[in-house]
Length: 126
Image (cartoon, rainbow, N blue to C red; front, side):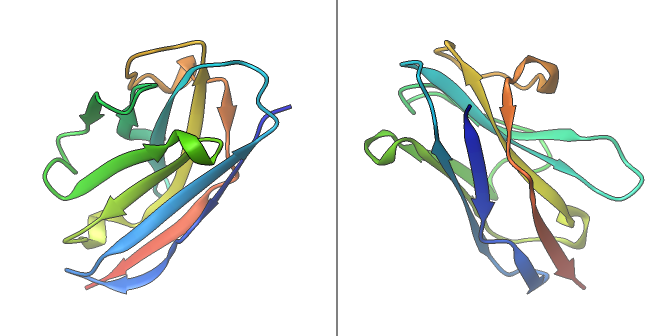
């Protein structure tokens, strides 16, 4: 059973930065795409960023493009990161990482991901 554990969330002032990490364990398949999603109170879960298996292809939601950067380290049992800069109060949400097994490229469709972490809270104060 794949387990994903996010870390790095917290409280930050607008304009600040945070770096989220997602560590995985229990994988038995050889390649997989990964993504970050978020869910604010009273809103549906939304796509934030995704990376391909190799890490050479990335895809971002328009709302975070130019501010957030997704990356992955396949040497570390694939830890995926989300560097968040120039944070805004609208970025406040629970952030989830997700794993799409046997998939090479990027995907922004939440229903297509197979495994999810428990989430980490990010709060941006104005």
